[in-house]
Image (cartoon, rainbow, N blue to C red; front, side, top):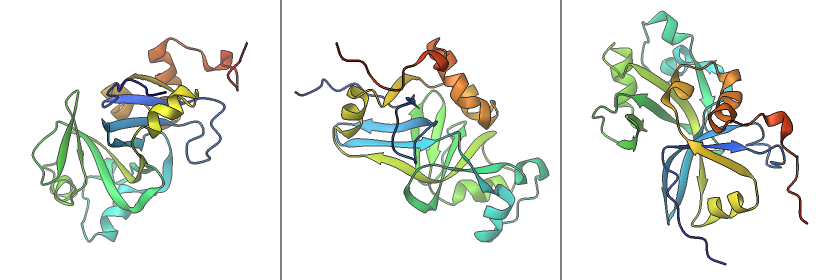
Length: 188
């Protein structure tokens, strides 16, 4: 049965307790792009064992801003995990930036990181390695099987909320206490 397409760009996907894929258990994914051709998202609550200072050294940039250098890099998803993606506000004008809505940009080009190193980058940013991708209809199928809850994205949750509080924060946006969610969908 074909589902009517609903654009989930600039929304969060919240993994249900029944999520079997270890890449996505207990995650909040920010959907940056969604069309009938598929979807691209970034996990925003899974910090890696690498900070921005180290990442910048690896790409031959020096990050002088001490608090920023200690910021964690996040596991964005299992696709292209050697490639960096930057969610940021304001959107700005970097060479490969997508305006995802809500004043948030997604940039995958190095120039945004060069600007950050120079102190002229976006005010707020979250850097991931890798992304999550879905083919045509795949995300809709997963949602129909209760793998994900969806809610409109909040920039505050991405940029201002500590990583370990983001999944609870996403459930709060829905007004749901995750303790009351059944691990599997019931069928009468």
